[in-house]
Length: 240
Image 1 (cartoon, rainbow, N blue to C red):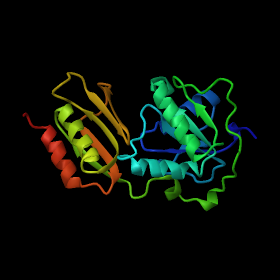
Image 2 (cartoon, rainbow, N blue to C red; image 1 turned 45 degrees about the horizontal axis):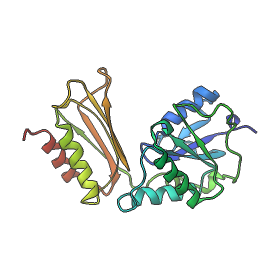
Image 3 (tube, one colour; image 1 turned 45 degrees about the vertical axis):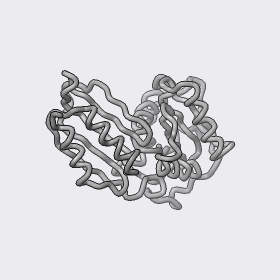
Image 4 (cartoon, helix red, strand yellow; image 1 turned 180 degrees about the vertical axis):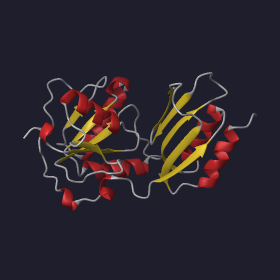
């Protein structure tokens, strides 16, 4: 049975690009909406034959700051059939080497496929069924971070540097477990709208589509201090 005929669960850390991989599987291999789904989808169907872990390989893990992310990834690798290295075109050789070594430390035999420029290798035929997945033995919590909190904030024009610095300091100096940040905002630094994507081990900003709804920041993590996050948001609105 080919993987095109099987239901596939895509799992991984928040922001690893699982929905991008889902769209790619649908376009490159003609998978349907009913045969590939993401662990964070609200109506996730846990009747599946394969589970794949998607890893954003653009940045390495920090062993001192990313303990939760690393622990969750280790747990996922013990459950999945294979690993998808995402964003390979943006990863330097040292970073690629880090992830190759890290995955091999967790499992010497777990297969890896590399997605380059939003394409799977043309000759790739899918992962072999190296382990039998029995969905009845799993719950959503087995693939998702437990007690993931979401806080959303409405904002006007912000100082982007102040916002990112405040969130990053909260992670590095206060140990706040911020795992995902998404935003589309007006900033004092740029004329165009700015989109923010924060994941457990990197920050990315880029020009947002002018048609996107703006003025919002969404922060996800574990045991977050909402009052403290509100202070960071408020501080980023003020002129120095």
